[in-house]
Length: 292
Image (cartoon, rainbow, N blue to C red; front, side, top):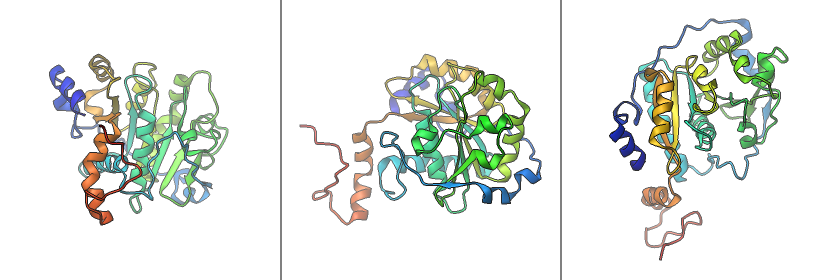
């Protein structure tokens, strides 16, 4: 994180945005309706999670993995912000493609859902290049696009992952013009009412500098998380992405792409303590090889 943070500091952006703690817009009031009643969730089909082997999704059965701990740290920070301000719907985006926004959105949703009673909904609003269905090994349709076009009721556009607290809305069928779909009043209405059902609604969206979708969605959510990738994201792209957003709506930046060795060394003592091994005799098949 230090290289990106230093670049942001020199550009004058680090203080307001590099850490979680900036102000957020207050959510709009929610209207209760029969279609959004709590018993709607009992109609949502449950599907097994068949994680993609290349998806890098955290495993709840291995809580000591460094990557999982990093996402729990992010979870702790945004949950603390939620305790001070009513934040429920959050969009996760990035300046450019291939910076890890879908990876961060999926794993943050998983981390939130690991808390008891913390119902979490992960929504794939990247209609242009959806990936959430692949990450969890579920069907792409029916999903959000099908619901917004009135083809299926809300509960059929959702899936519950096993018996967990995590619910997923995939992108749904391909659409010709995603931005026109996002301008439908049903999008605003849905995002206003979903907090009646879920504690967290996490949206994956297209990159900010590629399409206007994320800019539109950010005006409908309570906060935006920006993802930057070490060695790929430039200060110029971060600056332009920030300028395209309402600054008071940015919760913070998640820096992606740390080397495995950096995370492993950070948690090696923690892991050895709880496994009952000393640092000298610790043997971990997931540890990076020694550098000679």
